[in-house]
Image (tube, rainbow, N blue to C red):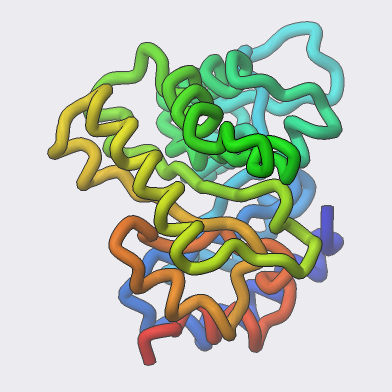
Length: 239
């Protein structure tokens, strides 16, 4: 929940030239009220636009919610589902994430599905079981073709906004668990195509190490993405 509509437009206008040469996909995930202006600002650039959440129904008595149809109609391409803050503060569950994933594909949106464990869960040694369960329920009923278009982001709750970061090896290990789960569900080919990101306090200093790990295909960047220079360095980590 950052930036007014004008601030978001100014941000994207400033970002465009800085990331224009990137061979990686750049996506900005903005609040609903910022989407129209950001879509216009990002036009004719390599920046794509995502919403931060959506409802699974097309329309109805769900005051305050936004549907996949509404997002798709505006030209949004991606949508974040099941972010840890949505789970923690707004009662998001694995089951609602799955319903939203199906709705996203119904309306031509690509879901960025978030999974991750708390510090207590990691300390109790249930990280692998929990991550596999979250992935299995989130993807339930999706086809191979749909999963191949899905982004799955591992965001350890204990490393978000705390300044703590999972070690490179910890991040890659859990992303490997996600990939292995997809492999068991959908086969090796799909598991190699699906994009798996790391999303725990990614910054300019650790981006290169993280993104060069075998199971990490990119980052779901939080606070660092609010700073133009920092985000530019993350996007252009190979330069």
